[in-house]
Image (cartoon, rainbow, N blue to C red):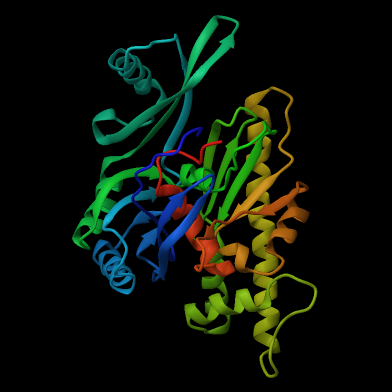
Length: 354
C-alpha cells in the first residue's frame, strides 16, 4: 500500500442493492474524476453472490449508458462471507515461482475448498521476526470459481472488459487509508448492501476481513415491507429521518418517520454487534497489545444523518466518516461519496504514495 499505479481502470463495486463505478486520479490521494451508481433490485444478488445474471447485466448496461464517458475496462470488487482470506507465514523466498509453489502447497491446508474449484491469489507483505526466525508474511485469498465466473460473465455480457477481480475490502482500504506517519491499528467498515469489515494493523497490513449479511439495504427492505412502500421510497425515508435527535418528517407522515427511526436504531444495534465482534477477533488474533481506537465508516450509511455517531455509541470506539472526494468542479454529495468510495479504491492496484 505504499505506491500508486499510474495506470488506472474503472473500479466497479457490486453489492446487494447497489452497483457503483468510479474513474479516478491519484495525486497524494484518490479522487473521483467520473462515476455513477445504480440501485439493484432485490434478488439480483443474494449474500453478495450473483443470483440473477441477466438482471445484473441489464443494470450494468444502464449504468454505462447513463455515464457514457466511463472506460469499459473495469476492476471488479467482490464481497461475501464465503470468500477466504488467510495470513500465512513461510520461510523467506525471493524467487516468485518458488514462492508460488510454496504458497500452493500451504493453500491446500488453509482453503476449505478444492483448489481446482477455486480462484486464488496471494500477496507478500514483508518479513516478520518470529521465534523460529524471519518469516515471509503472505495474504492468501480464495473464492469459488463459479462465483467469480458469474460476476465476470454478467460484466462481459454488458460490454465491459474486466481487467481483474479484487476484494472490495482491499479497495475500501486503498481509497480511505491516508499516507503519513505510522498510526495504530484501524478498522474500516462499509455499510450498504452488506456490512464489510477490514482490520488494518499498525504496520499498515490488512490482518483480516469479514462480511456480515446485514446492512443498510436490508433495513430499507424491512421498512418497505412494514409500511408497504417502494424500495426507493424506503431508502429515501431512512436518509431523511436519520438518527439525530429530531426526526425530520413532513405533516401526515409521522407514522412512517417513526417506523423508519425504529428500523434504523435496531439496525445500528445489530451492525454495532458485528463491528464489536470484529474488534474482539482482531484484538485476540494479533496478541500485540495494540487496541483499535479508530473506526472508519463508509458506504451509503454515511448519507444517513447520525449513523456514525450512533455506531460509535454502540462500539465504544471513535467512528470517523471516510469518503473519497471529487476532483475540482465535481464535488460529491454524501450519498454519492459514500457509494463511490469502495469503487474508487478498486480502480487502482496500490494506495496513494506517501
